[in-house]
Length: 289
Image (cartoon, rainbow, N blue to C red; front, side):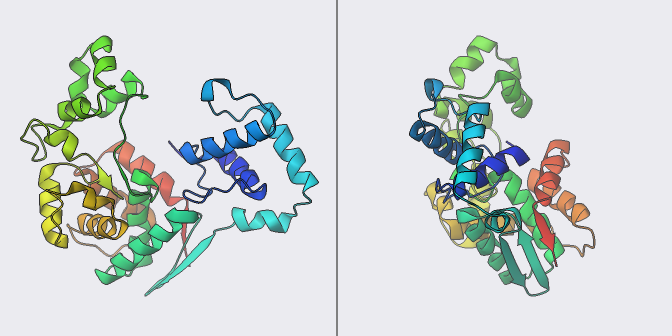
């Protein structure tokens, strides 16, 4: 899922028409919260929602525009959503971004943890945030299942699935525990039959694997091996994400793009084109004063 300007535009319209997006805010991503509010708008205005699907069609667009005009909304009303919604002052400058809602709150938490750990350079901060943002868009969560993901995309992401037939993969991806045990077991410290599904990605940077849970649990002083869902606490997740990204040190950077590539490689464990590209796209949502 990547940022799209047209999605951002109708998210702004939803907010202006009182269909609030309190959790993810206006982030340019067509996620579950946006889909739910869009369908609510359509239902309230007697526009068909086929089979529960959420689509931004021409009829919906035209009606939304008409309602915005009828409400006498001004350019000034819209500007609060178009311009950066948050500015955070750090020790060495200001970091601006376009997130709102819960995501914005979590960005502040992450910056506070960075400062506590000696990362005060805004260039390094926005680079780290860009890597974290491409993982979860700053919403702490447990790794989602792949039951609705195409087999092609799954095979691209998980090498172990490439030996499976379409029929085998279709069956496997519908079984959450079975799928993650298959793709994650016998690696990253997962040695028991059920470790793969127990130590799936959690937190802002989607910490994965028993060995990582053990290592970073000790670093932050939490037993996340026996209680992996502790990672769903935002404060714990922020500590782990920052500690994970600074494990190789924090060089001095002058270029945010160079810094972002550095932290993308740290997060991936090795250079990966897709991780770099997605992190650089996320960097576009940040600015430094």
